[in-house]
Length: 120
Image 1 (cartoon, one colour):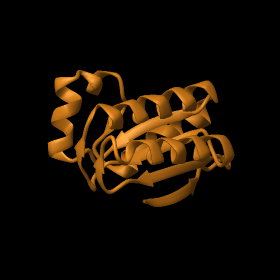
Image 2 (image 1 turned 60 degrees about the horizontal axis):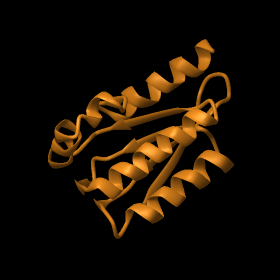
Image 3 (image 1 turned 45 degrees about the vertical axis):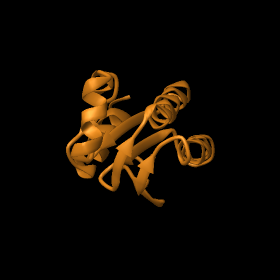
């Protein structure tokens, strides 16, 4: 899994995680632990780029919800971006697309968090 960090104009760190392949029962737990570690040790501001994730099941959705909750508890931000078309269907069918803030691109997601962080 690729991990990048960005720094906002006011010095806040934004983490971008890019999981690959499937986000399912076999991989969701490791992804969940990685989210927890990043939020608690690096920054509560997280973007998850899903462009390389072609399949998400309920375990994968659960790990994303838990990450969003952890970021919220730490007064952070949590965004999804570049949701693969096949994975987007899962978000739409489960109506999770109304729960998550989903940007079309990584840049949009980073800008959205950056604007939120600097306005607070």
